[in-house]
Length: 205
Picture: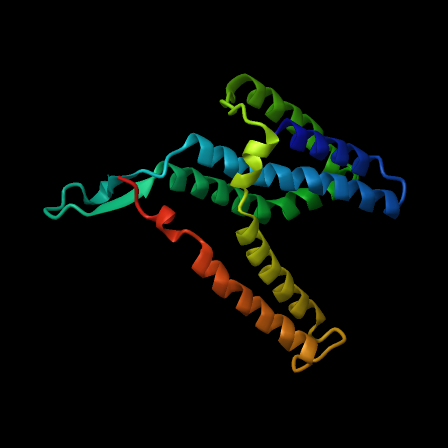
């Protein structure tokens, strides 16, 4: 997490100090590497700290009802939904805040504002987040990676996005290349659905 935050902070600083468009694009690449790492690691940390165990969650406003309505939820689902809500709020308010910053000061502060926020986040993580890391070698960890599932879902997504990108921008929807990519994308999902161990998603008692 500190490495991802470091990339994000360095990229933000370079974006704020950019002197031309090429430098800004290169700095955004560095910032994007850090941002992508943060997004992925947040979900990984949540799954590491929380459990999939389901527990009854009665609806408070129906507590006096003769027929108690019970839902089932898990710690992991609760925290994952909170992270999703945070991203939704950020996506809606980010352009407004960025526009206000750019109009009142300068566009550079749209990137430089990440520096103090990132410093506070690093401090909080350093003080409060303590995870037990299994002491395994690279060769012990490598077999645990889902190479086949990653290849199937990644290939399917890549072909689907390429088809959407090419269609209407140089090739027609009926072009063999576009149709082939769409068919290949759907075909790659079939072994993915058959391969993924869906029983792991069932309720754990």
